[in-house]
Image 1 (cartoon, helix red, strand yellow):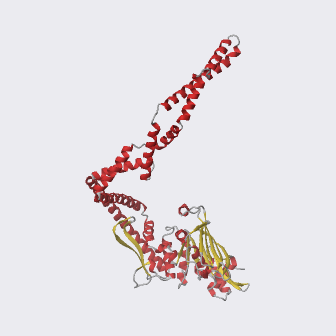
Image 2 (image 1 turned 180 degrees about the horizontal axis):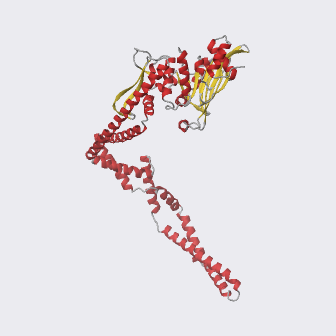
Image 3 (image 1 turned 90 degrees about the horizontal axis):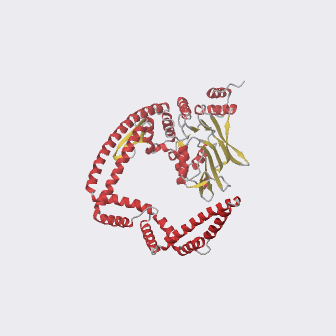
Length: 555
C-alpha cells in the first residue's frame, strides 16, 4: 500500500507531501490545478522516461519519493530481496532527474536501473488507464487471472507435474539423439575419460590427507630427531629421566614404612614414571614409522601431482571428479545400450504425453467454462458503466505443442461499441474506456492479481449521472480488497471516498505552485458543492453535497 508520496521541484510543484491511506482515496480540483502533474510524478516513480523539461524552472533537480507498506506481503518482500535490495515491511522508491538529463532511481537506498525498478513497480502500483503501468494489458496475465477466477490451482498443479516429466524425458531423448550422431567419437572419449578416472582410484578427501602427509614428510628429519632425542632423554641414555625417577621412587617407597608421609610423593613419582615411559614408547614407535618409509615422500608427491592435474583438467574437486566418474559411467552405459534406452524412453514419453494431454484438456475445459462466466460478468459490469454494447470474450487458441501453462494461450478481447470488431485489450485506444474496463475486471476479480495499489485516471471521462454513481460504487467495492487512488471530476465518484484530497494552485512569490490538502468536514462539503455547481456555490448545492457524502446539515 502507498503510504506517502513526496514531490520536489517537479513542473509547477515546489514541494508537495501527501499521506494516503487504505481504502478509497480521491483527488479532485479545478481543471489545470495540477492533478495530471501528480499523476506524471507517480508515473516517473514507476519508471516513465525522465526529461529535464520536468524540472521546475530555476531548479537543478526534481525528486519523487514514495513510501510503501509491505507488511503481510512476503511475496513482494521476496521479490525485492531477489532483485538485490534490502527488504522488509517498508519500501522506499526514489527517482531523481537532473538538469543535465540524467536520472537515478533508488530502491530502499540502493541504486537501481530502470530494468530493475519497472518490474518491481508493476507489482506495487497498477495505473488503470495507462498501458505502460497496467500488467493486465499483457495477454500473459490473462490465463492466470482466469485460473484464479475459476479456482484451477489443483488442475494447474497436475498439468505442471505432467509437463515437467514430459519435458525431462524429451530432453533425455534429445541428448541421446545428439550423442548418437557422434556416437563412435563420444564412446571413445567417454571410455578414455572414464578409464583415466577409474585408474586414478579417487577417494573423497584424499588430496587433503596427502597434503598433510607431505607436510610431515618434508619435516621428517626434525620429527625423527625430536622423537629419537626424546626417547633417549626419557628412557635409553645413561642417566635417563625414567631411570632417575625409578631409583628415587624406589627409595621413597622403602622409607614409607618408616615415615608414612613419604608414601604419597613416592606414589606420585611412580605414576609420573609410568606416564613418561608411555611417552618414551610413543616416541620410539613414531621414530620407527618415520624411519621405515623410504621413498614415501616421492610417492606422495607423485600422487598429489596426479590429483592436481586431474582437478585442473576437469575443473572440479576430488568429490566433483568422483561424481563425474559416476555420470560418465551412466552415459557410457546409456550409449552402449542406446537402442534399448531409446525404446524405454519413447515408451515413457508416450505415456507421459497421453497423461499431459488429458490433464491439459481438463484444464482447457475448465478455462472455457470460467472464461464464459467471467465474460458474462464483465458484460454486466460494463453495461453499468455506459458500455452496454460492449462485447468481452476470452479467446483460447491452441498451441502447436503443449506449453508450460497449458495446451492453449488465452487473451481477453473487447469491442467497446456494438458493431466493432473484437480487439485485444492492449489495442483499446481510449483511456476512459480502458479505465472502466479495468475497473470492471478488478470488480469481478477482487484481489486476484494482488497489486496492492490501483490508480484510476480518466475513469470518469465522458460519463455522468447514473453511470458516474455506478463507477463510484464499483471503485468503493474494489477498495475493500486493494488501495484505490482516483483522479476525478465527478462528485458521484468522489462521494464514496474514505479520504478526499484537493489539488489546487496558487501564486507564491510571483510564481505558480501546486498544493494538495486533505479535506474533511465543511471543506469537503464545499469542494463537493463546487464539483456539483461550478464556481457558484449555493445553499442548494451545499445541501446536495452533504446529501451525497452523508454529512450532517449545518445549523
